[in-house]
Image 1 (cartoon, rainbow, N blue to C red):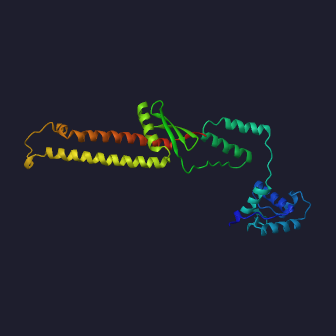
Image 2 (tube, helix red, strand yellow):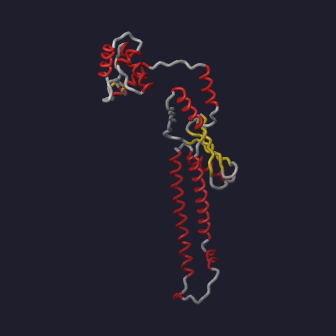
Image 3 (spheres, rainbow, N blue to C red):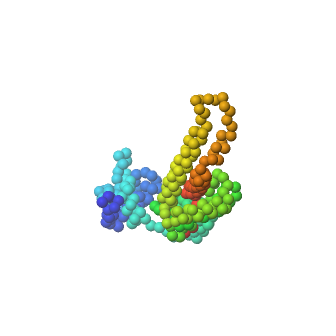
Length: 289
């Protein structure tokens, strides 16, 4: 068990009071606190010698220590922990502070602005640096995906994640998508991704896209080889003018041509869907839960 996980030491009322005053003086002044200063500001009718005895006990418990360059004492990590857990007192906010906090929160229209407002308020209230950390979700299970076209090359993505979280994201697609294309993409993703993690869904679409590309390349290679054989002249003769070579592709087995067209269509559609999914995962969102 680490020191931070150990139970806090049992301190006398006098030791608790002096530790609290020492921590507060160090926070405000940033300098090691000596026994004389502590005796003056503690509010206790104690001599410097009595103060030094209590400080020696606190140092033995690992709550304070003495820097090499000073005879004063500073709180340790464990001392700060005892101060925060058992000695720190709070006061109720007055009506003006409550109103200011409420106004700041009400003025935040998206998660980023809300986090920034919270950090600024924390800094203003404590007169220290404000730090706010968002909880990181381990898994984001997709429940439903919808795409709505906006102006230009922007698309509104509506994601229903986990149980009751609705997230709206505006993505820049790089080209215009029609409403029917977005509906097809949403239908495909809902069929392929519902109940799955976003990253897993993307990985599976990428694998499927790779397979489609492989099939397409294999079919096109057969066409190129066939055309190559058809265009070769005997014995390297080049005195015969040949025109209209591309029309030979019209005589390739029609079933194969249909398959090539289908592969092209599938490849393009899955590329578009993967692009939309990638943009949706990267865009900043507005969460409603």
